[in-house]
Length: 122
Length: 330
Image 1 (tube, rainbow over the protein chains, first blue to last red):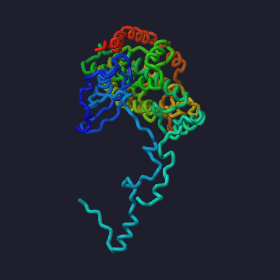
Image 2 (image 1 turned 60 degrees about the vertical axis):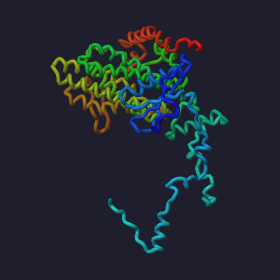
Image 3 (image 1 turned 30 degrees about the horizontal axis):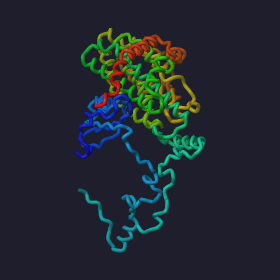
Image 4 (image 1 turned 180 degrees about the horizontal axis):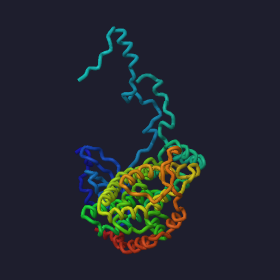
């Protein structure tokens, strides 16, 4: 189970809010087994137990989810430093698209006298 | 990688997806201008982004009115749950009512993140300070109304909602994608009710025609009077994409043929498609009626608001219980 969080799964039973202040909980849902968990939306709840209950009402009532997670919004830590995420340098060497060799291959074939291989049908 | 040229900065600021209006060192006017440029270029705005007050207020007003309409919109239909003709219809109608209340909850969530507490939104709705859609201010007289509402009122709404899936305010756009998916079930449910009754006894067919005649006026008013695109601030900010007239034309194009194929008639002698102009012509909707109704003077406006007031008072103990006194230390 790749998407199981490292800690045990009993968090749905726990009451980790203070129980009397509403706060936003982010809801993540898995549409079918094997899919990634995707953000669905958020609910307001005083604790994890009710957050799970509301999440089920909003995001699971039509059999559209096979798994739901709720995460207290204040527990989400964000990295939004664009200098780290989108550094202003050419990173094309890290991507397949950074290696364009059509012309170089043609030159190599010309030197070796070989024809371009035909695409073989399976 | 030894080529030193590859280490030169090659990406422009725009490609780095930095949103410059979030930078606090800039002046307000500069941020406003950068924000406007971003939105007009098709950029999206998230809840945590800086935004001009005018934008925040416009999105909030739009989403709040939408949330109010979902919340009030279930009242005409809930009256029919206990009178549904079959168990399957009762299940479907109950599910629809539950869905719409869920939509209200999700939209109030979007609005809350813009800074207005949910309780304040309920206060304003019940005090008549904020509005809800005109179609929910009318009574439902027969089971045929349930079919017409679920089919055509929801259809008119979904035409508008589909255009909101690209809203510049991203949390709203995401919520609309989910809501549109659920609404499509309601339209099928409503159309099935209408088609079933049209195929029934003459009395059933007459019930559908009578309901359609009654609802047509409010349906034509629902998207609002024509307005100039260039003067519509919600269009300017790309909160919505289409003008009221564009939505009404789209609704007519899709649904008039579907209504007429059932052998039903529409109570508007001027209604026709003008091939030359490429648009629908119709008798001028009663805009005075629209204004009267949405300002709380519709036939059921005050009853419905009173139902919500009583309901809110009667269910206060549930909210108190959920948020009860802090637990004693263990």
